[in-house]
Image (tube, rainbow, N blue to C red; front, side, top):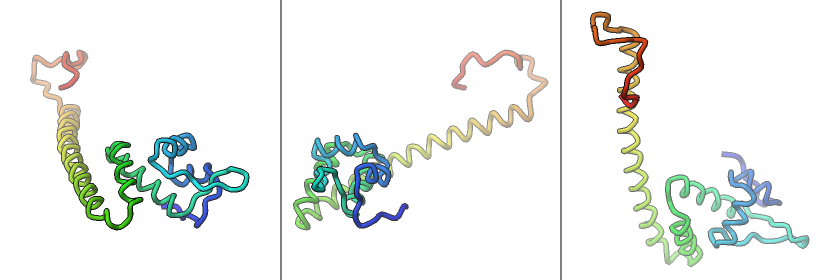
Length: 145
């Protein structure tokens, strides 16, 4: 992870550090997913290190399938202070379980794809020349198999 300075002096620097576009950061502020950034005298945004880390955390939640509404709820709870830690813990536990289920599903799918890849490698390396129903110049009529 890239070193994050204590103060980020522009929205473009914030975008670079978080992987979001400037427009996305502005949109997330507008819908209440992110707090409005503090402003310099000239009106330009600036961000603290903690704000950037919070944005990065939200991008991780989004990448794992959490909806914007769920992220907004989590953020609202965070803004209420330590009294909401048990609720936030429960929300993250539930989300973590969903992630684990998705990982398991993807791993099962990957096993099936690896099986098919190995099957195709075997066929390519060892064609059954005695199979009279095999026409190597004619593609399969079912591309899924």
